Image (cartoon, rainbow, N blue to C red; front, top):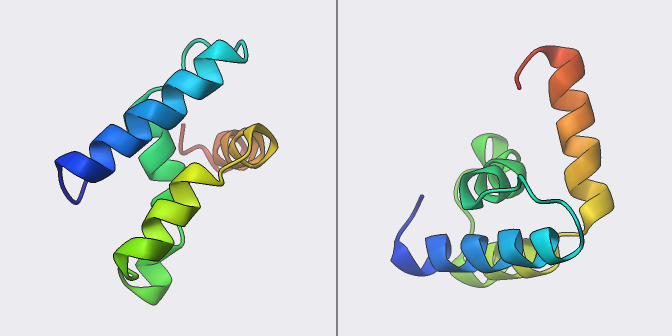
Length: 74
């Protein structure tokens, strides 16, 4: 991850998902989901990273897990 602040944001989002019943989500999982598009574009500016983390929806995360499972990544 980029730094402690990004990691803290990912932990916060993972905790939010756990409160919604998705108890096995970790900060690392959140970062992998959010950062999957950065490989193509390069690392964006910090405001986009923050927005991507805090606006991540459970449905987007679950779609990411499903696609990853089909591809054999998870």
